[in-house]
Length: 224
Ligand SMILES: *Cc1c(COP(=O)(O)O)cnc(C)c1O
Image (cartoon, rainbow, N blue to C red; front, side, top):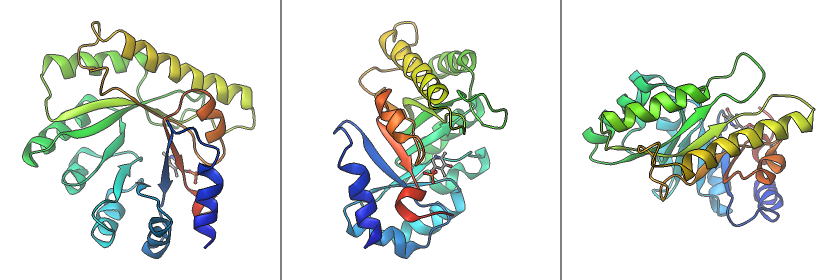
């Protein structure tokens, strides 16, 4: 029962305000079932096909979090059941999720992925693009998508000061948006509650800077 021990090791020091998402990408269903048996309910996947294939094999109260880049033409495969999409990085994607929410008669919860790392390769919105997206969501009255917060990935570096700066930067942006909801009417402060940051290598730093959702894979399931 290594998985149960790993989950316990991570969660025992977490504040109650922080939820652990077990990132199960590439891992076989047996390992997800083992985590579920240990009490884990939230699972993160980065590929639509993989999540859609695993979902029917897990109990109905499993929470599915899409954490990877999402193409608009694939939203339909997860729209009926996804709990939270962490990776909204364009107006077009937000619009598509809203349409799929309407088709499925449900409100789909999303986070806006913000680019905070110094590396060039990561997906995500700039601060200016976040403002544009929020204005669009308001002006177009998107009612079947709910913006619940922000997501970000820090640089892949050993420099903990840099990682902390990047997390704190996202934390500041999150607080700014939440506390100025009259300027950003697409945000409903009572629903804008989640800050998704931190993975196996840096979740402790992320928690220090206000993370509410940590996305941990290899420290639970082993390397990929
Ligand atoms: C894979 C992945 C994680 C988990 O990474 P680990 O280092 O295995 O904890 C977290 N977030 C995203 C977006 C990922 O793709």
